[in-house]
Length: 182
Image 1 (spheres, rainbow, N blue to C red):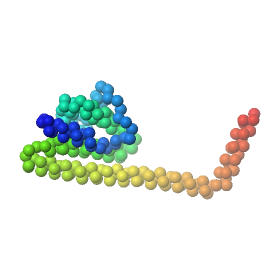
Image 2: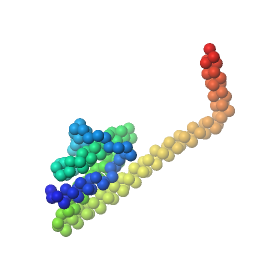
Image 3: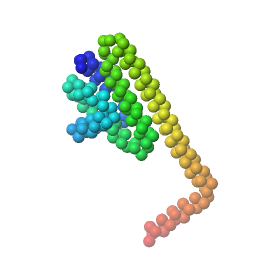
């Protein structure tokens, strides 16, 4: 891999947004986290592995940063497994972003016809990413609408039983005061 491609890859890798990037700082680099991150990449986006190997040789700090970010993404995705639809959308977005990074690294090719094919693939991935983002937002809206509906139902119950709830709360407070005196 040429130095130009390496540097383009390193820059693209470090600047690309992760599907599930957290506001919290990246975890510390450890061999265990490196192994977990590489297993995650091997399982979900093998085409990135050669580029990671090159990044490791060319820029160790950038490599470690990417491993830390990948590990963090894998952990965030693991936390989403209770919501299979969101997990699937976020994982698909992460895969598409990383396939795009591989293509970005290949854009340095000197052949115009190769560049055109890569740009066409990038265009398709850009479309896929926007579609996944829209689907993720639709899913989030549906979840929030469900939560809002439940909260409205709860509010209506409180309002419908306001006087009874006040009496029950009063009785509970008085009972607590009696128990404290004993």
